[in-house]
Structures are given as C-alpha cells and as structure tokens.
Image (tube, rainbow, N blue to C red; front, side):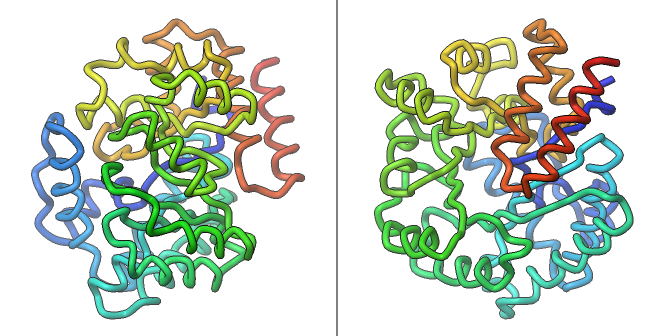
Length: 316
C-alpha cells in the first residue's frame, strides 16, 4: 500500500496542484492537453492557470487543499514550490500571494498534521526582480526554507551569482531547476554559480561523467519527476526514463510529482508507476523514500520520526 508508505515530497509546484473543480470555480479553466509539445507549451498553459489566482482567498484555498490532498495520499512532509514574487508583481501587491498561501498552509497543517515548508522560486529570464523573492523568503524563515531559480534553462544563472551568495550567507537553502530542459551543463552551472544544495530534476546529469562523479561523491540529491518529464515531452515514455540509470550511477534520487494536476498522479501513484514500470521491490521504493527524508530541510526529530515510520511500513 503505497499510500500508507510515509513520504516526503520535495518537488511540487502549488499552481500545478489545483483541483480541477477549484480551477473551474476560480474562472474558465483552460483545456488541458493530453501531452505538451515541449516546455514552452506547458509554460503557456501554466500562465493561464496562474492568472486564475487573483485574491488572497484564492491563494489560501489552493494551499489549504494541497495540505488535505497530500495528507490523504500519505505525505507526511512537503516542500511546496511557489512563485510568490511573480504573482505579487502581477497583482500589484508584493505580499498578498505569499500571505494567502501561508494562511492556507497554517490552517491545512493544523487540520491534517502534515508539515509543509515553502521553496520560493523565480524565473531564470527575470533576474532583476529576483531580490524580491529572496526578501520574501527572509521575511518568513520559519516557513520558507529555500530559494530557487526555475524556468527555461537556456537562460544563464550568471545574473544570480551575487544574489545566491547573499541568500546562502543568510541561511536560505538553494535549490535550482537544472538538467530538465537543459543539458548537463545547466546542472554544472547550478552547482557552481548557483551553489545548489539540491537539483530540481537533474535527469540529464549523466551526459557528463565528471559531473556524475561529483554528484555521487557529494550525494547532491536529485528531485526526479518521471511522469512530469514524459508529460512535457522531455522523455518519450516512462520505460525510457533515465531513472534506473541515475540510481545505478549511485546518485541520491528522490521521487516527486512536479505537476500532479497535469499528470494526474499524486505521489503514491508516482511511486506505483515507477514500481510497475521498472519492477522496483519494496526495498527500492523505501530507498527513494528515505533519500527524500534525508534531503529534506526538515527538523532532525521529524526526520527521525519519518525514518521510524518507514521502517514500520516495510516490516508490515
């Protein structure tokens, strides 16, 4: 029972968790394609979804519903990615979106027992206002654990070098998207210029043998999202996904959903798809779950509790 497996979820975007009924209630829902012809097509669809979020109550609602749905799926700890500053710029109020999300998470955590922290991300193609994202992160150190650069990986990270250094010096963890739409060079840049402690996706890291060796030696966690990679046309099919090769190379691999409202797969269904596609034993699924717990920016007592719960699940 993979719903019963205690799970940590490290890579999931709030705007891509919205329930279809909620999206319809917020406005005319855009038609969801069966698959996307690349990342650009998904970005257009995602922009249409994001435009439905207009008020603090909208953000509060989707954040609360995320907690409920994740808890029902057996997620015990989540790091939820949210593009706070971009929403704030769109709505003319820098704090409104994040305050709404924090209110929803607070109520959701209270009602479900789920523990959630935020990763605030920022588009690679909009470097100048990125300082606002870091400012928002620093304003909520108890709930915001990381800052990351996301989006089209053809855009360089060089404009962010000074900012990530400042953020790291003030205790903000750094988690960048890389090796998804870009090649191994984007992962290298995320490590060096971006000072990344974890890599969002990273599925193309194996293109560079020296990079692979460094990732293995340092055990830099990869937030791998197999169904998302297929849905966005980045991998032809799930059986062709490089997940087994990443594991075989000795890399620290975690399983995540990224865009569950698009793929139709919650985290337990992602685990099930990996099990059914690659023939993973329970011990292998547990290894993914434990790696996610180890990679999480969660308090040590919570991590220990999750490891004990995973042991209990496997023994049962």
